[in-house]
Length: 308
Image (cartoon, rainbow, N blue to C red; front, side):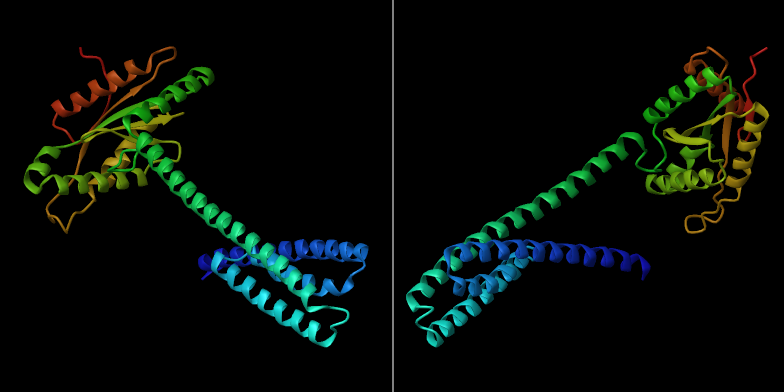
């Protein structure tokens, strides 16, 4: 109820503000009419203006159809009032003078309502086009920086984050660890269950792996079944602990709707970005560590060690 109540309250408040604005405009217009007729010496004609100014200005805050209805209703009441005044006081308010006033007021009212209705319709169209454009821009931006399948940062965006983080790493002298992850035997899952199931496995893995990371860690999809993780201000020992916790968490992930026997595991290689070292060198070392894990039997995490 609260989620629906707030938009309703804001909408009612905007309508109230529009009504107050319309009444204020009508008040100024009424004062102008009274002043003009005082100068002209004909106070009897103030009554039609008083009757029509308020409905006319209030109609500008309504939808076009409601504005036309209110304008037509106001003109009808104005005509009835002017006819009554001409009948009761023909000497002070001749019928010919009333007809001229009515024609002028009716013409001005219709023109104003028509113009404002068109403007309001065009304004609504522009608002809808603006909302559609904003949604499209948001969608384009999301596609540019995120992987559509897993909603993780994509490879291009991850490289931008790495460049930014590496500059801070050099400036502040903090430890920065990188890791390359690869789902074990993922090709068998695709071959056995199909690519649609493989996509679901990747989505579930991304969500599960992200849930055990720290706030400062960033996991991205590198491509295919490969993922990339960088851990700022993290020692090598802490990085290994983060990945071991993730690996153990993934082993408890179940896919009962696909196959109760299906289990996931991943291999990971870790490297540390040295001071004044290009990011690509650290990525290459993490990739080498990953291949060392695969060669040793998979389902493990290893820090890069030069081949002896």
